[in-house]
Length: 113
Ligand code: ASC
Image (cartoon, rainbow, N blue to C red; front, side, top):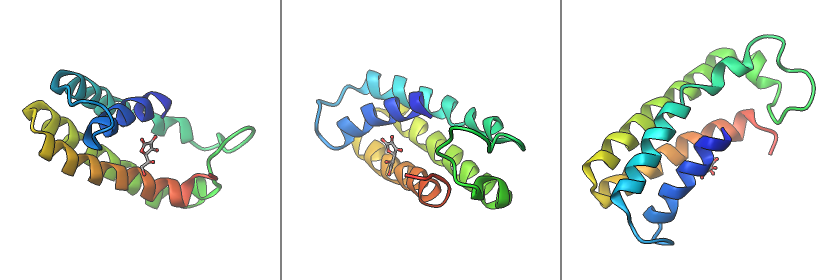
């Protein structure tokens, strides 16, 4: 999640005009984001709800919904990666917005803060 957020944020800085657009850097980050989007989920298997976690209990009590949200993220980050490969900033902005919504939708229901 940390690596994904870091690279997602780099693309966001370009999409929002905070740093100059660098097509290669955006594409490199989008590829990392897509790969990272596949990895966190096995960290939430049964029994991992103990100890220091930002995850809400809903992760384990609403598994189907959590899985659906994780799959939405993976779909949207794949689209972001495809957009980034074109080097078209407008396409990246659109895909970035949708991907960000998928991050937020899950955090709102499944993360403590
Ligand atoms: C980020 C990041 C997130 C998402 C989310 C989008 O850059 O680290 O978790 O965007 O804030 O709403």
